[in-house]
Structure formats: C-alpha cells, structure tokens
Amino acid sequence: MTSGRRLRPSVPWPIAVLGAVGALVFVVPLLGLVSRTPWSRLGSLVTGPVVGDALRLSVITSTAAAIASLVFGVPLAWLLARSEWPGRGLVRAVVTLPMVLPPVVGGAALLFALGRRGLVGEPLEATTGFLLPFSIWGVIVANTFVAMPFLVVSVESALDAMDPGPEEAAATLGASPLTVFRRVTLPQLAPALRAGVLLAWARALGEFGATVTFAGNLQGRTQTLPLAVFVALESDRDTAVAISLVLVAVSLVVLVSTRERWWRR
Amino acid sequence: MTGHLERKRLDARLVVEHGDGFRLDLALDLEPGVTTALLGPNGAGKSTTVRALAGLRGLDAGHIQLGDRVLDDPENGVFVPPHRRRIGVVFQQHQLFDHLDVVDNVAFGPASLGLGRRAARSVADDWIERFGLRPLAGRRPAELSGGQAQQVALARTLAADPEAVLLDEPLAALDVATRARFRRLLADHLGDVGGPRVLITHDPTDAFLLADHLVVIEDGRVRQQGTGDEIRRHPTTPYVAALAGRNLVPGTVRDGQLQLDAEPTFSLQVAGSATSGRVLATIHPNAVALHARAPEGSPRNVWRTRIAASEPLGDTVRVSLEGPLPLGVDVTVESHERLGLGVGMEVWASVKATEIMVAPA
Image 1 (spheres, each protein chain N blue to C red):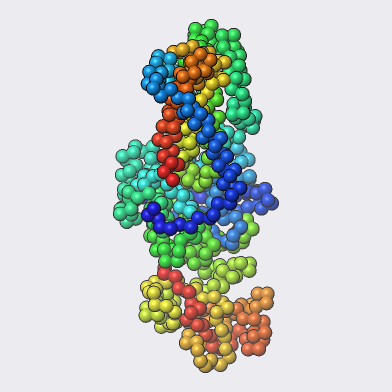
Image 2 (image 1 turned 180 degrees about the horizontal axis):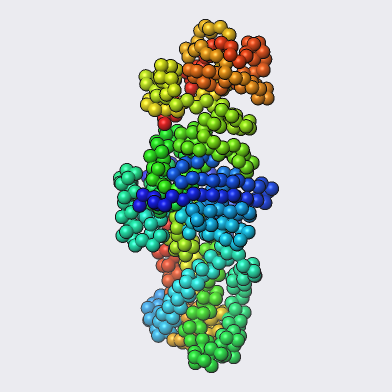
C-alpha cells in the first residue's frame, strides 16, 4: 500500500486453475470439519475430561519430543555432516527412514526393541523395573522416533550449505572444536534450528500410528489428541469434530506465532 | 599483550598435493620480526600455503616448525590442529562472526585462550582503542564498511596474541582509497607481532611497501627470493620480470610533482591532484619512450640519461637506464635496432604524467 504501484506479471490461466485446485485440497476438508461442528455444544465438549487429558498429553509429549530431537538431533546432524566414519551413509539412511516408513511399522519396531520382551526393553525392566510401553515415556519415545528425522535433515542440510570461513577463522583464533560448535556453528544454524524444531513438534503433535502401536491408547496416560479423535469417531462424532478443531486451532497458533513472517507477507 | 618476548622462527617445507595434479613444494624459513611477502600469480599455491601453515589443511610431506614446536610432520604422525598453533590469520574476506558485535569479535581470541568473559572484553577494548574503532564497538559486521570490517579482523587476529601472523590477500577485497588507509594500518601494527609475519599478495605494490623480504612463488614452487631491490635487479622468470619491471619509485608528491627519494633534485609531473605526501609510484616499462634526440611536443616528463644495460626478453629488449631515475624500459627489438641502442649510449627518456601510477605509502 505504501510501496506504490508494483507491476506484477499477469497470471496464465492453467497455472491459476491448477493452483486453485491445489489450494482446494486443503480448504475443502477444513470446511467439511467446520460444517459439521456442533457450535452450541462445542464449549462443553472441548472442556470434557477426555479432551482435556488428551490435549494436555499431546502438548507435553510433542514438546518433549521436539526438545529431545533438538538435544540429540543436532549433534547427530553434525556427525553426519562434518565427520568421516565407516557406515555413515547407512546411518543417514536409517535416520531418515521414519520419514517414509508407515508409523505403525515404526511402532512395531519400537515394541520389539523396547517392549517388555524387547531386545533392550527386557534387560532394562529386569535391571531397573522401568517399562516404556503404555506410559507417557513411551509416547515421547514414539513421537521422537517419527519427529527427529525432520530436525536432522533440516540441520544437516544447513551444515552442508554453511560457509566454512567463520569456523576456520574461529579455529585460528584458538577456539577448540567444541567452542567453535557452540560459539560459531550453532548461532549460524539458528534459522535451520527454528524450522527443524517447528517441523518436529508439528510432526509429533499429529503422530498416531507409532504411538498407538508402541504406547497404546489409555485415556489420561497415552491417549493423545489424534488417538482421541480416532476413538471418538467410532462412538461420538461430535466429540471427534470438537477435538479435531482443537488440533487445528493449536497447530494454527503455533504456525502463526513461530512463522509470523509467512503470514504477514 | 604486545606479542611474545620469545621470538620464534617459522621453518617449513610444505608439500601438498591436490587431486587435480597441482603440487605445492615450498621451503620457507621465516625470521621473527620480519615481514615476508609471498608474491605470485593466481593458482601459484599462495592460499594452499596459508591453509597448510594455519593447520586448515594437513601436509602430504615435509614439516612445519614454529620455534621449537613441530606443528606438522606427516612422516612422524605429528599434526597440531589450528586452535593449538597460535598462528593468526587475516583472511581476504574478513570472516567476522555475524552474530557478534565488534567487541565480542575482537574478544573471541582472548576468550578462546581461556580468559574470562570480562578479561577477554577488556583485552578487546585495548585493541579497539588502539585501532581507533571505539565508535564502531557496538556494531555488527553487517553494519561495517569493507575497510572497517577488515580493520576489525586485523584487531581480532592480533588480540589473540599469535606467535606468527598470516595475511591472506588482506587488501584484495578493498577499494583503492580504503586500500591505502589499510596498508598504512598494516604498516603501523604488524610490528606488534614479534614473530614471523607473512603477507600473501598478488600485488607487487603491497609486497614492496609492506614486506622486508619477498618470496616469489609460481606453480607451487619458490622461483626467487630476496629484498625488493635484489629481485628487481635480477629477475629470473618472465613473471618476476614483469613484476620487477614495474619500476617502483618511492618519493613524495607535492602540487602534482613527484620528488624522488633517491634524487631529490629530480621530479616528475604526475596526473591528478588527489594524492599528496609519501607515495610509491609505479611506472610500467612499456610507458617509457626512448629517443635519440630531445623529443618535441607533448610529454613534459623528459630527461637525459644513459643506458646502463640491455638484455633481450623474448620479443622485447629490457633496457636499464642510469640515474637520475634508474628505470627498466621495454622496447621492441625493431626500435632497439632502429635507435641503435647500446650500453653507455646517451638517450632521452620520456613518460606521460598519466602513465605514472601513484599509491600513498
């Protein structure tokens, strides 16, 4: 408005039509959801104990998964991008596998590894009495399993594209590799970290398959919002719609607050 | 923090092989307190030399020794990583840290050496004061001009108290006016480094002005070394001859007149009035014309001299003139014969004012 008259290229009609269809793919389902919303009962549905438990659990577990992805995913991305070791390519493939794997398969794999009879789970329970499945920790592990690859991929490609100049300069100034990482590499990664954490958080929030397989579906303990929606669809459609709206709202709030620039454009 | 009391010598034989067949093989013996210019064309191996000395690239053979510390010796499995070498580098692109302000950039070295945050900032403050950077202290690199950024980069390197300093084309990214100022800054502050100083450059003006000793490298090898005068007098390769032939003349410019240091009674007219004071003038050997008789007309810089020497250099003949201005002059073989030039012969030399390039020294 203040920028004066800007000439833009005219829009060719095939691009306009196909692009509009592309947008409808997202808009129509959302409209379907809104059209089925029982507005008068929405307040009481959303504040019910089932939805409240699921919302609290979802926010806690997806935030924990995002933090875990950050703490372990950034060093992992650094190892993949900056060091040479045998089997690196294989590890990279395994790390990114959950992005294409059906989450149910991931959940089954977690069960065989960390479950009561699992490879690691059995000795873990024998020595510490700690059991991951069917607990909030199981949900966090399942969420991290599906979410961390997004952060690793985002950070690794940022590390690959990074100009090595400032890091080399830091080394010649006497900074140890750990100091270089902390004081020069990490600050340069800030945009990739923001994007990676957001993606990981969003992926964890929507996680269904791995969670239900590995952690089960216990209200108040492992039943996150997506699980609650699935259960409610069978028994109480109005509740399913209400929970779905809550998910849409929470996701939009996060998208808007963290990527404000996208929306202002 | 003004350099080490113990003055260390940098002794190196650098052998580095690139995948593309390029092989660097240099022997360098760099004395403390001396600025050595590494001069050479693009692709000569100058950057590889810096990276090898700084530890950003390992040697394939040879050794690097600073004082009594061996920094790299592949045959004996020794490699000291860059952060333990205490060799400072000023890069062509300043490589400042974008997310830190000027003070924190300069404090980075002292902080990395284990000083606390407060102590590191106080060391940085001293350097900022010394470099006159106080007004820029709170700025980020993005808010600095190219020349300012390079000054901060120099301060940052010196603040880390290095035992040797490598300057990798520090002037190449600067515009002409800034370059003169930065050159003076380098001349003022390089003395603060007690150890060896290495200036990498492809610009002979920088080399002659800032360095005590010149090493010319081509194709990964040392072709010639010595003082500027020695190299100028006895060029051994066409590249050195072209460099050396550039006739570098120190003097003082006042009111458009260049007065020679060597012969204060002799002066030349130079173009433009912007520059004055101490300068290094460059006169290209092609820019000087020789005449058998006093020329008439345009060039106002005409003087009488004798031919001291002449030697063939391919299609041209390099003629050396006697005083008052002992220039090297390139003439074609034809004109050499036409004028019947011979050693001891009296000639008139002329050069246009616009052909004399003047750089503030």
